[in-house]
Image (cartoon, rainbow, N blue to C red; front, side, top):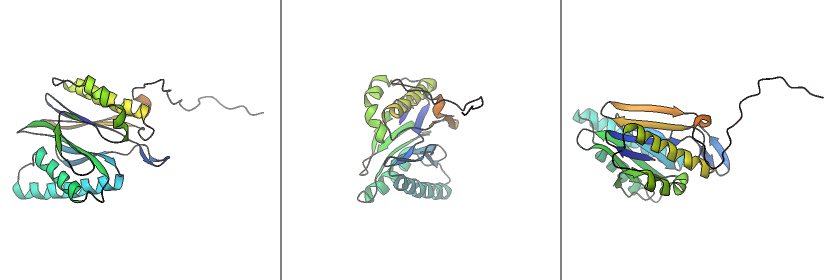
Length: 211
């Protein structure tokens, strides 16, 4: 999920990648850089979303080198949309593009499966997003501070993790503003707990007696 605040944007994602009932990765980084201050949140088919981010990142770096100017968030988002739409029959990738530029400041774009592009104040996607639409509607405000926006995203991802078996592991946050990108990692054991979730016990400190 991602949201806009007064000085920029905050992106957040869990770390779990699953194949059916099998969890193939519990600490995957689903936040991919497309430019210095533009990032892509990946959900859906991991290979499909990854190939889109790789292609867009390649185009962005080439265009920025040619023009000697940073690309706007909207231009990067439209590149993602074009690739997603032109390959809509083959790709299963629900994507969120968020970042900061000097012209329009913080921006969030949703690009779901099929290639639609929508500019929003906040956006959620992925299997866990179904469970947190009500939370996001009720909790989001236009005048968030950076700390409030980070808390909103962290709690939203944690709520999705508590309800969705395909979401879990760690939480990663990226805050993007005029100063650049700021990364934060939250271990799964330190993430907020909801719905009577139990903390995972640590390793035993004593010995074991058999017999």
